[in-house]
Length: 398
Image (tube, rainbow, N blue to C red; front, side):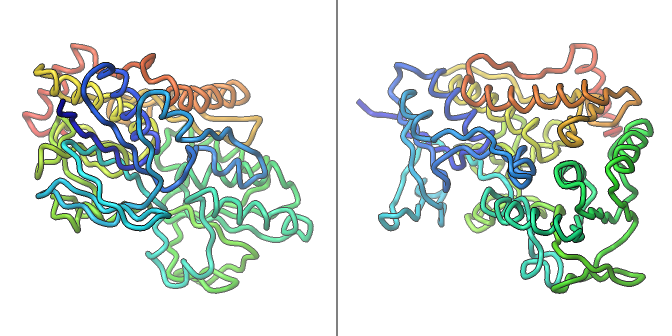
């Protein structure tokens, strides 16, 4: 009997969801599903700032979760992809191995880009991985004891969550956040006001509209001067692996694989791309940001899409709509920023302990979804909104 070989690259939110849901959808059928990932366990990226604050997020083994579902786990780093022969080269502890596929689900995610500024890689820390979060965790207690300054560069959600988490955990730590944009630019007026008030209560200094040019061993340099620090955390831009570009797949300027509205690579229909490493925005007319909120639905969709394809059925195109953004502000407060279907902020927010509880629920539910993929649903636009959205694409509104 000929088996259809399906390989999933990456064991993050989208890759784990795709692999486990696909195994459920195709149970009893002649398929072989292999997931390749560099780490032997699942990493909760949304909780890395908590790990850096000396908390211990839940961990579970890839093998223990995948094997009962008939999925083969291979720990290693993919170093080459050849779409012509449908083969991968995987660097493992036992040496390089060749891995063939009939269908590939590319879910390699993203990492913090530490190459965008002089001195960044040499002098700054990041929340890119458990290892880098642990480096910061080990430094913060002694830094707080001496009243040192932690400088956080980046005013996005990562920077905001990290600043509040550390300021609350270490009240004697001097926390300063630098951002090139207006602080809280991605939030509504009510949302920005609430986050500013929370920063003030926690004693966090904000310096916005500040463009950093370089980082030295003890200071950051910007247009109007410099600012000294004892530890520097870079919470800036993300980058994706270069593997897809090197393989000749069509990618955007950031290196994300450009897909059609079924999440297939526009270069090769046997390759699906999901999560941070995929760009489906042009195909569906909705901006897709890098987040587990977008990664999980993409993983769900591609599992349903590929299962239908293998069974000779047509599957509907991918759709997505936003509902809210969840932001933790330490353990005692949070902000739920409600947004429209295209991620534009509304003036409706949830704050305080209710916001913190809701954010914690979402984080737990996210991990639960990865472990129980059959009991999840895909967000889909209501019929009226879907018609209006398609009409706006025709006339070029979005």
